[in-house]
Image (tube, rainbow over all chains, first blue to last red; front, top):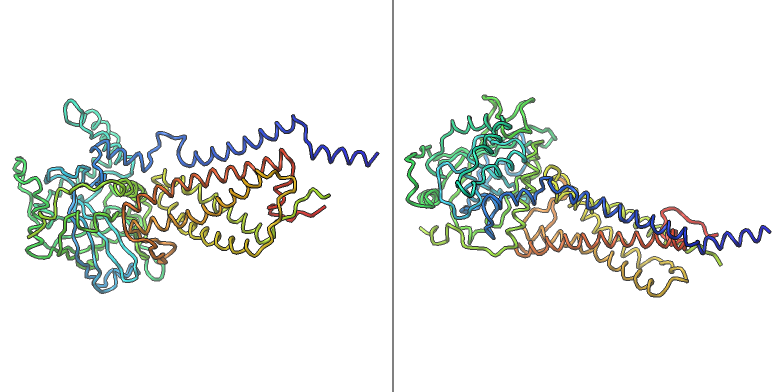
Length: 368
Length: 181
């Protein structure tokens, strides 16, 4: 008898009946479906309205059209090279090699803040400057600065919503004032920032523009002490206000042509100014200025002496991702930083695979 | 006749489960980071060193495998399934080897510094070329999806054998020691 029992048990294990096979097969199926479901959920497949890097970049394409081969924002640009003479003052707060006394090569790109690579230069368009500092140890510091003293948006959603609200109505060719009103009503930080921005009238050209890093970062010294900082570039070329005649410029590329002319006359220089935050200064909100009177450290001088069309410069293919940082500079808790990194990367990936079209500023425009 | 199959050696089982945990984490991070604005940076910062770790691990696994005794499949395993099992193993090993290399290559072609941790950076393995970057970037995604579905099929096949056919296939790679009856 005991022998029989064990035999029948063995048989049951070896040859399960059809019913239990169905149950176990179903269990396997459910587990596999669950695993696939989790994977797709993590990839955002079930949240079609979530703002992703791809959808953000689609927004730029919606606002500006698709211009293959060009950046999805700051599309019109001109490349430069030069060097940064570090005076060693920054080494007090950051162990990054670039703040030790010495000269470091710099590659950069001036741009206008919209997605049309052939747009007409206008004094009020935001100006951009992307820079890459190369350290002897092989590390790079990339930073993308703009001409606004403060950023009008405190998070990626605000930037995106404003961009979509600003798309001109196809009938009136102007943004829908109702949409803009609704945006402003929900974004007091934008109103505050615009007040500050209005008190900084645009300068006459790229060469006498101040550029701001906007978001806070943290400098880390050799002992691991971390300090909140913001940085900006202050031109040594004297400020001249734009003459606001209201008439369209005679030269569609007057800002870029002016930059080419002035750099051919003499190298252009900016001081790199680091503003040191105090405990309690907001680091997670680029639309919120730090109080006046914060310590400012002049850490060195940027010199740009060679200008080049995008078509011949390696800077065209540099993604000025603000989170390409050397040891000694780390991101703050500002949500814009990760979002910028993600969207710049998405824009870079799209244009990298596209055929390159001639830039508005051609190699022949750049010659003396 | 015993129904308990022989187990893989302990070193192979350990490396298998370590790889499994790391690769699943990696697939989750990979698919989540490309869809995320706020967590993109922190996830990418883990993705790169983890990829290199998996690359090293698969090389170690391959070498270890060459020097280990691989237990035979259960004797009643149909020959078509033997072929599928062998082919899927080759596919999984190849993907685990190639995916990190494509990632490394694509960052090289893009001209990105390839930070691993602190100031430690990997050297570029390809010349700078954005067209090449764009191709490798797409390849990376496609291969990652292939890897994910190959993993799902691998899991499904093992569960099917173990639960439905009850041939104790899982015991061969079980993380614990299975005693031969």
